[in-house]
Image 1 (cartoon, rainbow, N blue to C red):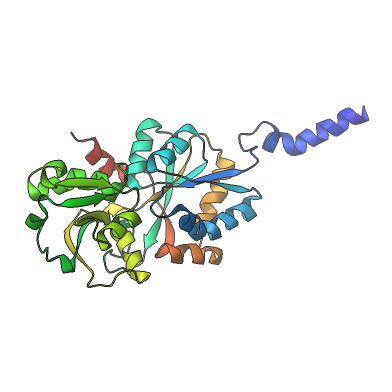
Image 2: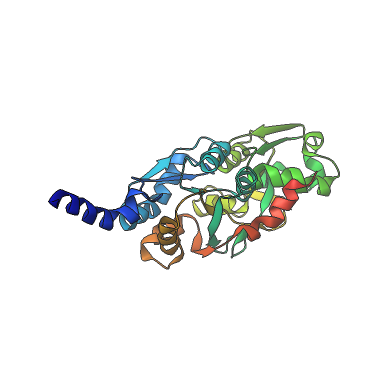
Length: 287
């Protein structure tokens, strides 16, 4: 009888919250699209990882992504609980699982290539010392793109850039090289391995901040329409009891996030929703 009463008391304490709750998980799984070297990216995210682990009392396990598609697969399948996707990666993931939830995004500081706020652009860049001054001079040349699922490094250029030159990328450029990340595209351009590169304006600003180029190194030949910045996304089925404290941690002005925000050239994290990405979803759905 005593044992039975003890068990009933224990279930009253932990049963409703943990024993049968979808929140009864022993870790939080996080992934981010590999916009740069993944080790560098994980280091930059460490303040965020540490804060989540401490406040949620859960170990945070980082999925070491090798491609944009691997992160899309992980969040669609439920293999990760929390993902940072590019806008187009989110559109592709949402098309496969509409129950995922975009809930936060970074607000960026003013940069040389990027305006302050929640938007950035896809840029076509060339080296100033190449002598290329206009789009017509890039016809037939070698261009770098990022990952096929990259918003500013592939998908938006393939959708928007043809309107500027009258033909698709494959017909306009002599060769297209997929490098796998914005950093690798910029590195290839700076080293002269390609003649031009489609990259994120935010990534170009980071290279400038790190002293890897200056304001006179590159020339912008084309820029896209503004693109809403990368969303933080919950997997489908993650319980509200876990989502709510994550929202509060990310969206509050927490000093513990200052190092993370600085590494992203960002002022804060702000609330977003699916509606913020609808224009891009509609653009990508066009034939």
